[in-house]
Image (cartoon, rainbow, N blue to C red; front, top):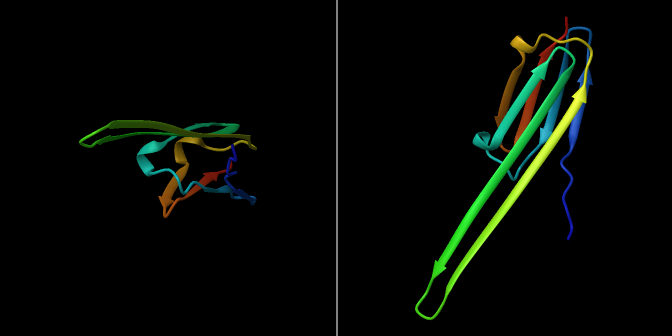
Length: 97
C-alpha cells in the first residue's frame, strides 16, 4: 500500500514560529490541536462510511485516515496561538515568549 506524506514547512523568527501543513484529505472538523509552552501537536482523523444498495447486492465500505504531527519548539505562548485552515492547508502561528 502506498502512503502519501504530508508536507510540513516551518519558519522561525524572533517573534514567532510559523508552521504550514499540507492536509488536503482532511476538513476543518477533522482537526485537533494541543499547544503547550514547548510543543505543538496536530492530530487529524477522518472516517467515512459508504453504502450501496442495488437490486441484486449490497455493498458497504468503511475507511479511516489519520495524521499526527508533534514538534518541540522554543517557549511559546499557547494561549495566543492562531490557526487557519483553507484549501487543505493548515497554518499555525505561535508567538514566542
